Structures are given as C-alpha cells and as structure tokens.
Amino acid sequence: MRIFDPHIHMTSRTTDDYERMAAAGVRALVEPAFWLGQPRTSVGSFTDYFDSLVGWEPFRASQFGIRHHCTIALNPKEANDPRCRDVLQVLPRYLEKDGVVAVGEIGYDSMTPEEDEVFAAQLALAVEHDLPAMVHTPHRDKARGTDRTIAVVRESGIDPGRVVVDHLNEVTVARVAESGCWMGFSIYPDTKMTPSRMVAILQEHGLDRVLVNSAADWGRSDPLLTLRTGEAMLAAGFSDDDVDRVLWRNPVEFYGQSKRLDVSDLASVDATFEGNSILRGGS
Ligand SMILES: [Zn+2]
Image (tube, rainbow, N blue to C red; front, side, top):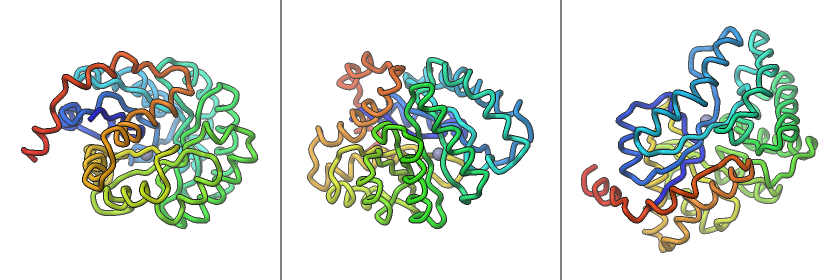
C-alpha cells in the first residue's frame, strides 16, 4: 500500500512516528499550517513556524524517505487575535515557495466576523496565487459551519474543484459532495471519525473527490489511521486499486493542481516496500 497523507501535523510528532509511517507505506504528505497549542502573540512566531514548514520539517521527513509539502495560512482560531492579523501581509511571499501546495488551513473555528473576513481574504489569495485551498470546518456546530463555508467558497469565485472541505462526517458529507468541493475526512482513534465509519461513507458516496487523512495533531491521534482505513476498505471488499485511488491518486490529483507536487519518482518505490506486513504482525 502506498500512502499520501493529505493532512498531518508532523510538527507535533516524533521521529518514532516518521519511522512507523515510512514502514506503513507513507511516501508523501501535506502538513497544513495551523495553531500550535500555545497562542502566538506576534507575526514573528508565525514566520518562524512557516520557515520550519518549508525548511526544517521537509528535511526531517526526507531522512525517512517521505516527501513533505505544506499549506500556508493564518488559521481560523488565531484569526480572532488582532496581534496576528498582520500575518496576512507576509503570506504572499510564502505562497510563492516550492513546497507550498495550497492556502490552508483556512475557514471557521467559532464563526466570528473576524473569521469571516480572514477566510474571504485568504480565498482571494488562493485565486491570486493560483493555488488550491484547504478548508477546516469547526468541530462544534458542524452542519451550520459547513453550510456557511460552502456559501463563502461560492462567493469567492474560486473553482470548487480546487477546494477541499475537511473534517467531514456523516452529517456534512452530502452537502459538500453537492457543492463540487473535495471532501476531506480526518480519522481519529475513537472520536469524530473512525476507519469503519469512513468505509461506510465510501460505500455510500463513492471514491470521487475524497481525501482521507490522519490529522495527527496535538490531541489524541494516530498517524497510521490512513493505513488502518486502507485495511478496513480491503476487509470490506474494496480492491487494492480502490485503496490506491483513495490513499494515493486522489491526494496527488487534488494537490497536483498547485503544479508544485513532485511525487512521480515515488510511485515506483512502492513495490519494494513491504513494511505493511511487519506492522500488521507486530503492533
Ligand atoms: Zn489540521
């Protein structure tokens, strides 16, 4: 199984995780810029973080044979802090960098007027820089948050085929499918969305425009839940080709729209990688 994790916060993970991911077949990933737990109080804290997403973290990933890409944005939570607002001014220079494959995570946390303004401004940046957009949906009041997200995406004029709306569940998937946006699912160990629930959604909605990720952030999470979802798909009767489509070709197609994704050389190494069986037996 070759895996492209389209949304994983490696900054919060250890080298042990990189090692286990490589053994599980993870060959490439996208790390979206997000909050860091402790609130940031100045623009400089953001630029240091963005620099690590385009510099240090890709180097760390490369030591495990994993291709690292990122998305850059002012996240919805910190959009509410006036001390962080000038981050919008430094974004254009990061959005021109090679490893940056989308504007994100943008969207809503608490659905405040500040978040409205920052979300719309960053969708405009995505259009201007000809990049896809990676949109986070709130974990509270998800249905209303998702409806409002779709409305703002529509107003922005960005092609919905260049937008992924993430952290979906059974309640929100249909409205995003209908909008023409890509559907993102973050799989967690025991909350929000699990591999078996994900399989049921794939059975009902099909494999088109679906991205599955392990998020793996500061909360309780597991960077191998992409693999576990692939295994659950196979157990439910999906083919190897179906799994490859969801866990590899779909993220390549979506982030390939940035024209900055270079994973063509990675496709061939899959056959030599037999780490899956070790993990199945050993953990
Ligand atoms: Zn995230």
